[in-house]
Image (cartoon, rainbow, N blue to C red; front, top):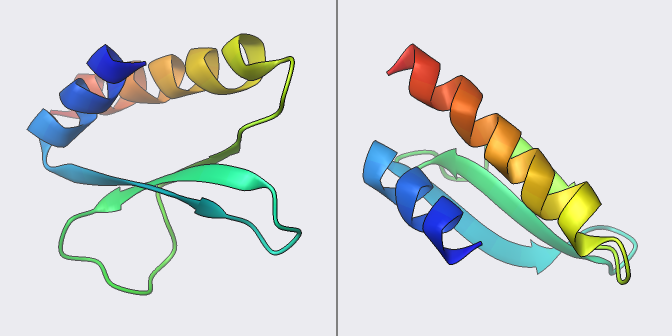
Length: 69
């Protein structure tokens, strides 16, 4: 996961850990200059399914962003 986050940061995006409106922990990825706007990617950190639902989804997002850069 750390490698994914570092790669996203190197592209120039920010990664924020927060919670959604239901209080579930989330990761949001957005442009650095964007304040209060809609994130490019959001995923909920689900206990027990972190790898399948979060890390794999972030890896796929990173691949799609890398293709654009």
